[in-house]
Length: 98
Ligand SMILES: [Zn+2]
Image: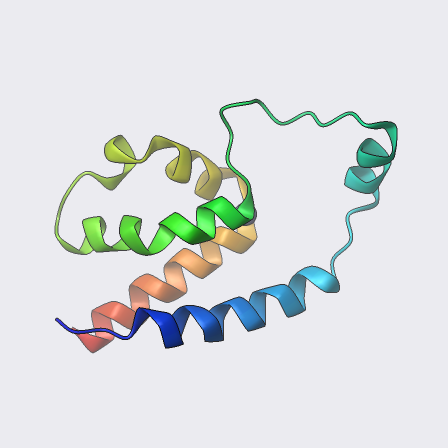
């Protein structure tokens, strides 16, 4: 399967950063202002999740245990609605393209 990840990710990224700009979490801003971030050191953020989610989707589509291979991505997907939607959109698009 040949898939143009670059173009697809770029399109997704534009849509996502658009959404992010419109979604400033006041609680998170307060924490940042205090210099206190409650994320665990082994947690990944949306950007890291986004960098790895295509590989994660590849594994899922290949029938591999992506959650076991990339637990931090799975963990982030469980907690982050935006990234979960992104992941599901990617999965749906690739299944349709396959
Ligand atoms: Zn996220």
